[in-house]
Image 1 (cartoon, one colour):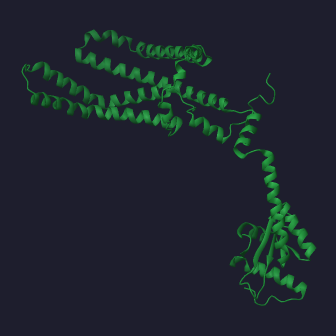
Image 2: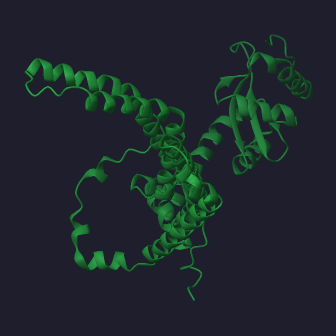
Image 3: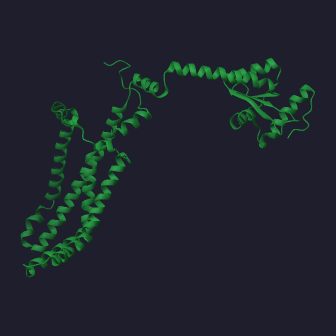
Length: 358
C-alpha cells in the first residue's frame, strides 16, 4: 500500500493541467471522431446523395451510349476533363465540406483549439522495438482490444436486428423490377448503416467519458508533487518567508514615520486601521498617510496610542477608505462628509476647530 506521500490524493493544479495540455496529453476518443463522421456522412448522403446518383447514372449512360472518340487532341481532352470535373464537384464538394466541418467540430469539442507543431517532428524513440513491444502488451491496448471486440459484437447485433425484421421483403425482391429492388436495397442499407452509426456514437460517448475520467486520474498529484510544484513556481519557502518578513519590517518602518503625522486613526475596530492627516492651511482635502490590515492594523493602533492620536471606530468608513484610497492620496469627495464628521469630533476633543475643511 502506498503511503500518504505516494498516494495521488490531490487534484491537479492549473499548472499541471496546462503543462499536460502543452505536451499533448488531453482526453480524446478516436472512436468519437470516427462515429460522428460516419453518422454525418450517412445523413448527408441521404440528403444530397440522390442528385449525385442521378448525375453518375446520367454520365454513365452518356459515356456508354455515345460513340467513342478514339482520336482526341489536347484541347478536346481539357474540355472533356472540365466537362466531368465541374459538375461532379458541384455534387461532391458539399458532401466533403460537411464531413470536414464534422471532423473539425468533433475535435474542437473534445480538446478545444490546440496547436502542437512539436508533435509533427519525428520521434526516434518510438522506433525502439523493446518499447514498442511494451506498448503492444500494455493494459491500455488490451482494454482497447476488448472494446473493439465488443464494438464488433454490437455492430453485428444491430445489423442482424435491422435486417432480420426485413427478411420477408428481402426474400420477395425476386418478384420486383431491378430499379425497385435496387431502391429498396439502398434504402434498407442506409438505414441499417445509420442505426449502426448511432450505436457506435453512443459507445464513443461512453469511451470519451472514460477517457476524461482516466485523464483526470493520470493528472492527480501526490502531496509531495504539489509541494515541489509550488516550490518551483514560487521559489524556496524559506526565501519566501524571509522576503515577507523583510517586507513587513519595511512596512512597519514606514508606519513609524507616517502615523505620528496623522490627526486621527479610523478603525474597523480590530481588522483595519486607516490614519488620516488634515492641515487646512496646506491641504485641499484630508489625506490617508497610512493604512493596514491584520498585523499592520495592530501596529498602527499601537503607534497611535503611543503618540496620543485618537482612535475612532467607523466600520463602513474604514472599509471604504482601506479599499478605495491609496497611501498619500486624498480622501474622495463622496467621503468628505464622513471624514469631516470624524475630524470635527477629534478637533472638539482637542479644543480645535475644523474651519477650512473641504
